[in-house]
Length: 284
Image (tube, rainbow, N blue to C red; front, top):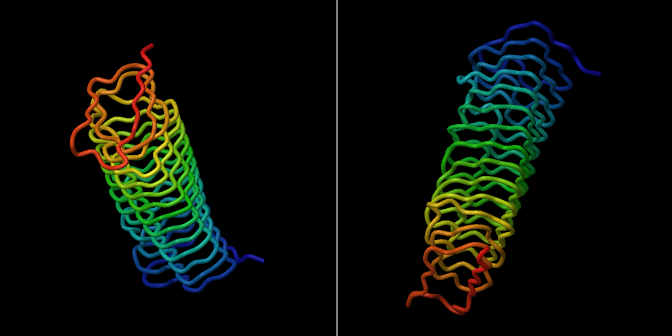
């Protein structure tokens, strides 16, 4: 049975420390530290969080229709089994070294350094802005209807599946592994450099020097913007591209079919073995 706390205000350090089986309704946590640290089975409905380090070392908690102020920085670290719905989060540095994150219908306008070293992440109808270095060293990620503004996303990420996303991020997916992206738009330079097992399905990509040094790149019905130059250098690539491609440079192996045209196809003395890649242009 859960204890109910309703229409109360708390502040200072650790006001609800080590709470278990607790439901909060219309509660305000004012500026302070570690308000619900070391707790389990917590439900928060229509609550406001102003203090930092709210849910640390917490196992099993849900937050619905809640607000996290900018001062509630680093509110979710070292915790497990988080469920978030219909929230507004102005706090930076959320989600660090966590296992089990399930978020829907939530905006994060101040997503600085989100989602580091986390596992088993699911997000749907989520927008994150100002989120440099999001998802760094995280794994087992599934995103749907996702929007992001911020550079260096998904560095060193593993086991990622994304549907219907718009990702504006320089250097995204750098050295990532086992990534599949469907029906999405990705904008930014140096996409997926040094990645492994990258599959892009019906995606539109813009930016300079995309998809270089990739081991195991698959493209299915993708398109590229007019600024997408020097593609695939030192990558193993298989798949097909629709429309025009600005330039392709020194892919290492595989077969690339272009259903349109290539502005410049560069093969020079810097090719890497086995240097047997094929580019087949099928003009429409």
